[in-house]
Amino acid sequence: MLALLIVATAADASELFERGTQALLYNRPREAATLFEQVIAAEPVNGRAYLYLALSYEQLEMYERAISTLQRAETMPGVDPGLVRFNIGNNYLHLGDAERAHAAYTAAVQADPAAADSYLNRANVNVSREAYEEAVDDYTRVLGLEPEHPQRERIERMIALLQDHIEQERLRAEEEARRLAEEQRRREEEEARRLAEEQRRREEAEARRKALLNNVLDSIRTSVEETENLSAGSEDIETDADDEFDIAD
Image (cartoon, rainbow, N blue to C red):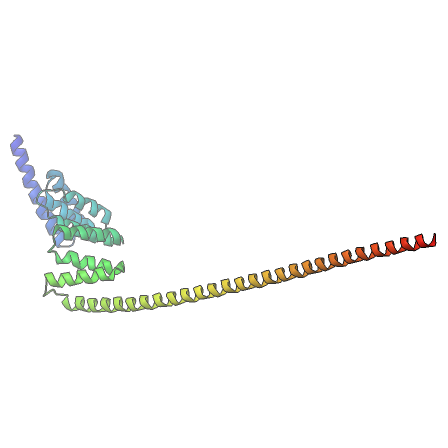
């Protein structure tokens, strides 16, 4: 009896899966989501059901739920991890999270280095991140993997635009570096002139100070000599007076 129940459940899951794919095909994602949720409840390791359920959520703009479903799908046997990570990146893009989308696409190309779509989407994200050289590398890799890519003309045009932008930025950066170097040189020269002027003023002030000290010192010496001479003259006068007093006696 138990075996019959399991077979019946598997058969029901298969029918539900088929109905779910038809709902997706005819743009009925809400119905499809309900059906694939039932499939997963019956067959928890049905990797394709997780992928289709995530696609249903994505069409319903339930991007976070789509991401969590895809992350569960990645642990299922037989699921292509590169495809799962690629779709995770797409949903992060819908959420406006370029950095996580970039990380997901990088994980996708690591899982499948021949996946041109993963490189293409990562290239587009790199443009939005202004990582233009990385974008050129990714676009170039896309054309290397698929020389007849349906968007080859647009990709080549984008590569040309990015390379021109990169070159213009390089020239601008060089000019800016020259301008900054010239400004730095002028500042250093101005600083050197300022320091030289300060040094000259200090030396002149020191010279004036020394000259003033010398003048004061000379005046002090002159005053001392005059005082000594005056004292010497006074002694002579007193002696003469004494002499005269003695004669009067």
